[in-house]
Image (cartoon, rainbow, N blue to C red; front, top):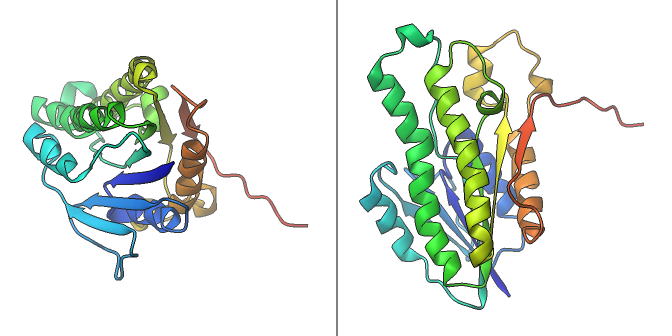
Length: 232
């Protein structure tokens, strides 16, 4: 059975890190969807597709036109798509910020899932993994819009996991607390960077989900703290 992987949000700190891992795995074809290509030399089995705003349904529909469903193929999709905005109490949050977070984190995921599920339905099966957030499961102050949007995504994942059984589609999400990225290091200069999960570690974990997609379904995997284990 051939395996094709789709990575939505392949550029950026998280997207770039997980993509590096995926490129070392046994996928027959890898589709990278992003605003720009950050890989110097693409492998023969890898193709980059430039995408537009994914909160617009026409753009998502257009992106999936490059994928050809087939009953002899399994399809996998990892999405890093989303956005963050915080630092305000609920009563100081304006409607525009609220709607922005809902669109970037929830509406985009709905549209990606909608069109990906149609691919899987016409194929042998597959799996999708979204990027939620720790605060979506464990609410934090000053993150009303972002946390609610990610909480909605978590519920959406569990809902789609139930719907997906009919078409042999499994659905999960990773929910990291803080990812070790240059932006986060600049934002929290005095933090213990070693306790933050690395993008490549997320990539390895997601690949393991896809390797066992037929029985891992409807889970939200939270990553709060990275333990430092010394080698003996």
